[in-house]
Length: 229
Image (cartoon, rainbow, N blue to C red; front, side):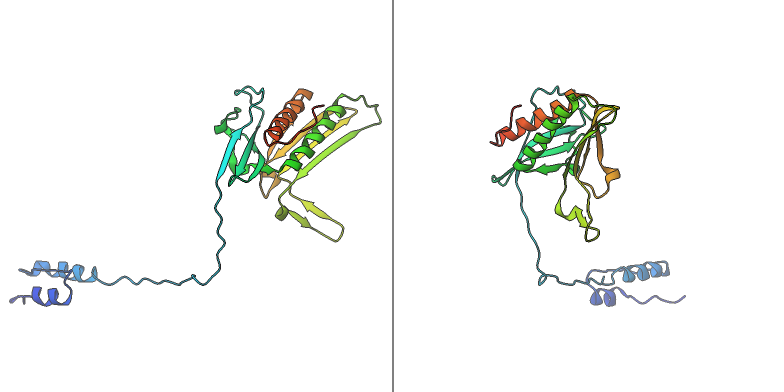
């Protein structure tokens, strides 16, 4: 086939990273592969440094409110007191993970947790007091009593029309006492879709009472006095 020219010098001069020492024609394919692998990779960059950015930094201290709750109780929710940046204190209402529903810190689904400020906790606590009273009332076959508490972030409150406002509540507590009897339910979870929220049924009056007691304890820990009735 004739002599193969010594290309090692030429190649090493063109690119100091690539080296080839050719002795026989068998290495011609290796030469092609090596030269193609040394091509420069294009990198593009578009700067967004002149675009305004919003920056937020939050440090949160949190404590589980236990009250008289048995840690093995599977009540479907957990109540925490929390403080952000050593300034803003509030109550955090979190659903329990379905795979670990015990009343322990690790059972909380913080991704669906909902904060309530002091005034909102007091309003819900007062509503639960009314629910307990409603639960004990005796209604006739033609009477019914109802209570509803809605709590939602502003972006989930939409005006559908001039006269209609639509809520996607992160906390929705409802209670009723109809001729069929009393019942209460809690829909819980910061979610854009009600079907993704947790549904907690209060089958007994004591379930509502326990919920209120925990909220009262949390509110008192924040330094707010709640009616003890």
